Image 1 (cartoon, rainbow, N blue to C red):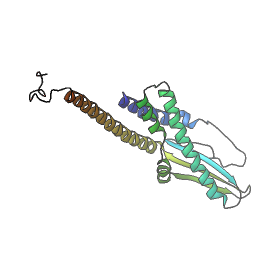
Image 2 (image 1 turned 180 degrees about the vertical axis):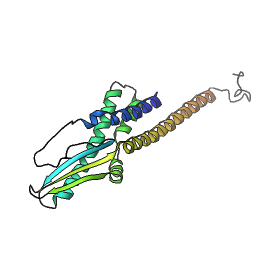
Image 3 (image 1 turned 90 degrees about the vertical axis):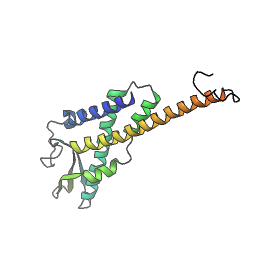
Image 4 (image 1 turned 30 degrees about the vertical axis):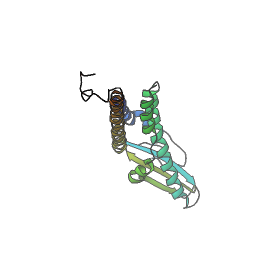
Length: 190
């Protein structure tokens, strides 16, 4: 059952990332902002930031845009989990979901894949505008690889618990055998 859940999460994430609600704004026009600000790119997840101030505002706007990208990816994952698995009761299945939800390596993935497609310092209004994007395919591949690792860990746990259960059964059988009877371990001689 757990493996089916993992596959459902991958499928649902792919659909969610590719759906139009990642590009929820049709048309936004902000006075003083560049024409591209708040306009999504096809096949990419983008975030936008602006910061008023001198040239120092460029790095601050880039950092803010990166943080927004982390929040947006995490929000996408939370939405996928909520819409597909909100009624899960099994403890092991919940553990798989929590492993999928929490990703300590997301910031490294973003650092590797982020593309600042636009950075403009508007001198007349003393403001920096940024657009940061990551291709949807990169996000889907990254999350799919994460899920494959989680699936492998789940399989290891299942195998280990099956062996523990089997060993427990054998131990309880041995303790009930007659120690003086050399044939007591053989099936049918109990």
